[in-house]
Amino acid sequence: MSRPPQPPSFWIGNALLGLSLVLLMFLGSLWEALGAGAMVLWMAVAGVGMYFLMKDKGPGSNLPD
Image (cartoon, rainbow, N blue to C red):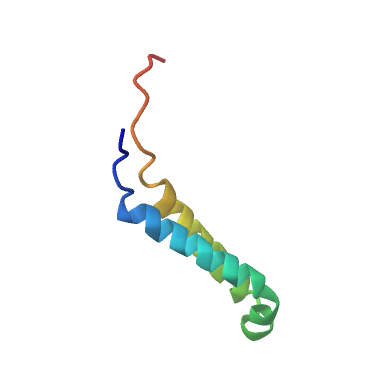
C-alpha cells in the first residue's frame, strides 16, 4: 500500500515550526534586539506553522459516532 504524498501545506507547516524552534533557541538575543516583539514574532510563526500543519488532517473516519 502506498500512501499519497503529503500536501504542500504540511511541508510549509513543518518549515515554519522548524523556524520557530530556531527563533526559540535565539530568543535571548532576539529579546535584546526586539524586546517583547521577539515573543510576539515567535508566537506568530509557531501559530501559523500549526495552522498549516493542521490544515489537512487527512482522511476522516468512516466509523459511526
